Length: 301
Ligand code: UTP
Image (cartoon, rainbow, N blue to C red; front, side, top):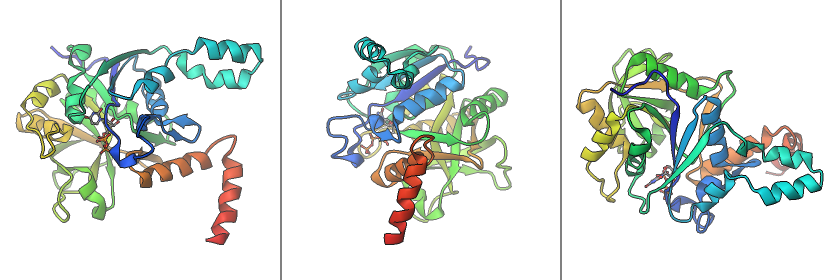
């Protein structure tokens, strides 16, 4: 019997091709692109660790070894910095000293997000688990963070899947996985989802609530993935697998990001630039300088 009482495992899929970010991603993973002073995937791992999860599986693929290197202790670099008394820089490398254990598996061909998640089946066993997309940062200015609330909502509802949701501009719904909820649903807490549609055609979206890169699943998702039909590109879409969960009678819930929480999807240049600017502006050390520069620059525009 799958247990949701204590969730300790997380899966970070990072095996996608990142074609929308070419040429920046020709020979490096998009998850390693810097946002401010850290690569995207470091924010994701830190968010998971602060939510108390202890086992993290990366689903990697071709050209993704930089991610493994990033989370490995570089003893030579540590030795050099120690010899040079560079304590500030040594502190920047502290993120590798973590209580969480990292595991790696490969998705040799990127056959879609659901296929990537299916690679975690053995790692997950009978446990409920978190999936956090490696190319998306959830920034939370509210105390406690979003992920612990999502996990808590999942445990309380007994759902087979609980999804992070964010409100998007109605004219942008065609870019996202969009959910349908019962009318009159109170969106301040977790609520049941009736249906999900991946990238609905313009004018057909059932709401403006978009799936926002964080999920909690029971192992029931693996059977749903096995039954999922590939899309037109031959890829298995996770939204379609979750839709199947609802059709098989499993409860699926959603929880909205709230004020002070925001998802940054680093999958295209538009949102990558936005993310970089926001994180650079908020940087403790360099933020002031960036703000002054942007103010000067804005006067020239
Ligand atoms: P995306 O669908 O945005 O990534 O996946 P992509 O396929 O790399 O993007 P484009 O369309 O080519 O630009 C979101 C996350 O899921 C992972 C990606 O690495 C990214 O972190 N992913 C996607 C996989 O691990 N495997 C896949 O087959 C697809």
